[in-house]
Length: 259
Length: 97
Image (cartoon, rainbow over all chains, first blue to last red; front, side):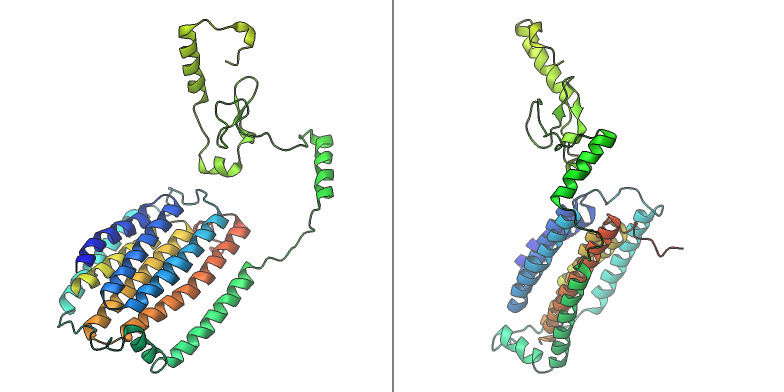
């Protein structure tokens, strides 16, 4: 029971974090916390086999799959704050609250009776008892499960397969296209400028500075711009530095003013 | 016994509210997983109350079906993302007349 009272608040908080977390990766971590706590509760309730399966299948396989898909889809800001249907969040919260209260009250009145416990059923060990049921009474369901898993694997392969509809561009084609663009529109044929050039940091989130001191947006990766993680506040940085230097000694104008 | 069932119901309710509220398809999927996990907890608790292992077998089958469902669902999300460059559930509204 100690495990339950210790883990139950953690699980509820993590589940709320799953609903309220802004970033999908944080939501995934909250879900992993809930799943591992659930595994411990299974162990405390006489289900050591399910404890192992929960950790291996859920936190090991399914959560990794979620994180991989998050990586593929990209951590963009697709979870918009704007509501499509007006007042949907409030309505969903109220309905959820009513549903939860109703169900908890109903269960509180119906679930009763002595807890038998699994001492007798786990007499030969929990995996032994489970396998006796799985390969005896539920063997047909077990066979159907194997068919389901094969179908799921096939479906994943079909859905993830991508037919190449256009011609593959070779390196020579790309070079020729760049030169044609340069001739037609004057677009620079070389690589994009590197981030951090002439700036006060050389990190990838710092735009390069042009000779007049203004940041060059195209030097920062699009995904960093999409997440809104571009380093801000260049003007302040340089102003502060100029003030510090200016207090101590007059600036030498012959070094070209970057500010 | 009641505490375990109550915790399972609270988790299920939070998961269902999450499905209604969130817009990102992957997070909606995670909320469905939370609901499945909550039912598993109820299965294991009832198994302990009744003193037989049928509930644990049911939880085991739920886990297997959840694994298959996640594989298909996530590949659907990836293929929608490839076609529409978005993982938001509001963007995929082509069937709306």
